[in-house]
Amino acid sequence: MKTNATARTAGRMISLCLASAALATACAPPPPSADGGADARPVTDAAQPEGGASDGGLGPGFTTPFDPGITAAGNTPNTINVTVSSEGLGQEGFDYTAMPAMDQIVIVDGWELRFESILTTLSNVRLNQPGTMPADPSMIGAAVAQDPRSFAIDAKKMGSFAGAGGGSETAIPLFAFRQGAGGAALDPMVRYAFSFDIASATGDATNVNLSPEQFNDYREMIAKRWTLLLTGTATYRGRAAMAGTPSADYPTSVRFRYGFSAPASYINCNNPDNGGEGSPGVAPRATGPARAQITLHMDHLFWLRLNVEDPPPHFDLFAARATPGAMGMPALSTLDDLMGVAPTNLVDRMMRPIPDRGDQTTGYTPMGPRLVAETNGASGLDDMRSFVAFSTRSFAHFNADGLCFVRPNGPITF
Image 1: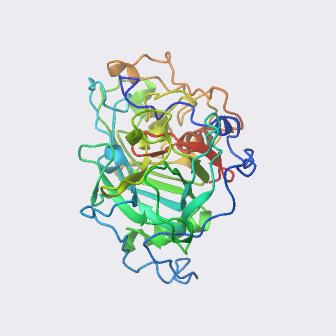
Image 2: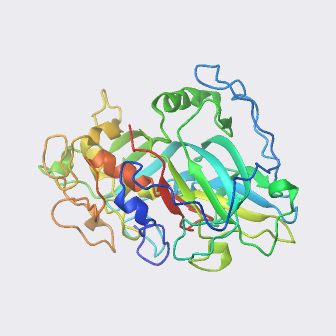
Image 3: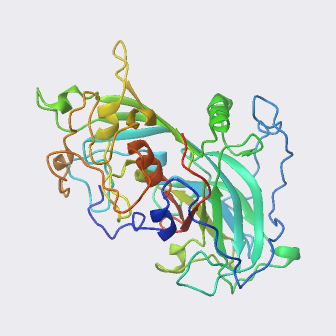
C-alpha cells in the first residue's frame, strides 16, 4: 500500500461519466466543441501500415520490425514524443514488505507479484486545441494532429526512453508529432489537449514489441475483442496462515491470466510536467521534444474500493478463488473465477468469507474480520469480475500521474 495518500492522485474519481456508467456506453459523446471543427489529418513522422489481416487474424505487416522514428538522444525542437510505460510496478512488479516506505505500493495481504506480459492496444492518439471550459474537461478545441493507427504493445517490456516516474522506469517510444493540420508548425505557446484510446485488439494493429511467442495471445485478444491481457505470477510472502483458518487453504503460488474488453477514450489529460494538478495539455518546446507518456497504473486491477483515492491493493480475493494446480504446480487464477461473486459477499472456493489479512502490513486499517469490496456508487456491476474490469478501466494516465477524462467506448465484456 502507499502510506502517503498525497503521493499519487491516480485513485480519485477520474470521471463523472465513468462513475455512472460501469459497463455500457451510457456516456454519450459530448456535443461538438464550440472551439473546433473537423478532424485534422494525421500528422506524424511515422508511415501508416497497410491493412488486411492474413496470418490467423494478424495483418501481413505484423511481423515487420517497428521503427518509431524517434530516439532518446533526439533533440528536435517543437515536437512531441509519444511513449508508453507501465511504470516500475508493471515492469518490475510488486515487492512485498510488512513495513513499506512512505511512498511504496505493496499488496497489503502479503503477496509479491510479477507480470509476464501486459498486452494492450492503443489507438487514435491525438492533439487538439485546448478547450475554453475548464470545468468540463471533456470539451476540447479543434483537432490539430492525429495518428489513427492501432498499436499492439506489451507494456511490461522495457523501453529506450527514460520513464516519467523516474528511477528505473523506462518508456517505449511510439512516434512523434512534428506538425499540425495542413503542415502548420506546432506552437510552443499552446498547451495542446492530449487524448488517446484503449481499443479492442485488431489484426491491422502496428506491432510495436510483441515477440512471435506472443502472437497467439494477441490472436486470442482479437477473437475476443479484448483491450487488455495480463499474465504473471503471484507468490505469497506474508505471515503464515494459522492452521484451521480459511487462509491456510489458499495457494501460496498463483499463475494469473486476466483478459477482458473495456474500450475507452482518455481525453484532455492533465500533465504533471506543467507544474501541478488541473494543468492539462502538452506544449512543444523550442529547446527539444516535449514528453507525452501514456502511463498505465497496474495497481488499479487489485483495488477493492471504487471512486476513491489510492485504495490499498489486495490479492487474496484472486488466490481464494483460484483453481488448484496439479502435481505441485501453481494454482491458476482467471477472471472467470470471480463470476457470480457479489462485491458484498466475497467468498472463497468453499463459499467461506475471505478474511482481511491486510493487517500484517503497517499503515493499513482492516475493513473488518472479512474482506469486502466497495462500489461507492458505481452501478451495473454484476459481480467481482465486472468490478475488477471497471476498476482497471481507469488505469491509463499521462506523464506518470496525470488524470484524464474517461469516456467508455463500449461495454465491458469477457
